[in-house]
Image (cartoon, rainbow, N blue to C red):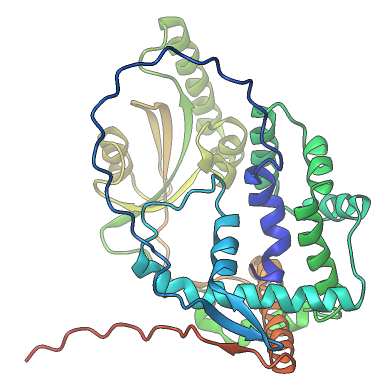
Length: 371
């Protein structure tokens, strides 16, 4: 795993799927009376998916890196410790060079950390996790909290248990070591981002709407088709009340979509973007295509509930403003710099350790040439 990806992985994926360190002890089973043996089925012959790897896959500082170490690293990444059915011998050939490189990188990294006597205590790990979690997008953080609640845990409890896990402590130590060594001083300013933005205008263009499509926004009050008559009436009264407000002031559409609509599009003022025929349910499509740009429909009933639809103006090609992409662009350029810094650092360590690889990258398969 790349060091620069480590923090996000720990917080967003690893925090949920990290396997428990100790298995629960099972009570000894009572012996059952002997039963008649069923005829044994002939077991399918087992295939060694690692057969393409040599016993020694690399040499680091004169010491062999073995095939067994590569398999151990791979197996440690599997939540249930079982090789998935799709992971075949052919797939091993494709990913083996990266797995070998990962084992070598881990060894070189560990050696550098040992030289500097760099470790992370449970307290340091906890603080590190708490600081990183503040940077997680709210939507991902909310999902994480929900998943933990289903397991009967709070976020604080989970961070504490993660911080006490020696495996996690080692991963965090690596991330901290990286930040204090080859990642130290990496910074991307708004000026850097703007320079990149101006140098790559094609990256920030949005195409014009496709032919035979329209743009529309809507406000949805959901009601299930199996709802009671009282529930249906309440939903209808609600949408009719919203329609009255729009009849008086159509400019309230986006604001009402944000506060009243039960569709996720409400967060964007109800905008559904551009769509063509066949992409929406028939009742919605018929009403939307019948409108003129800027016109607002009456109440439209579909299987999802009651809608008010506004047809929006078609959009030509445009350029996304810099202010809109600045933060994402700074994050993108920062990660680019971090990846490059890690690559140079690892190349330097490999050169110093006189690393030799015995598993080569496969050449991409060529398409058959027609005669």
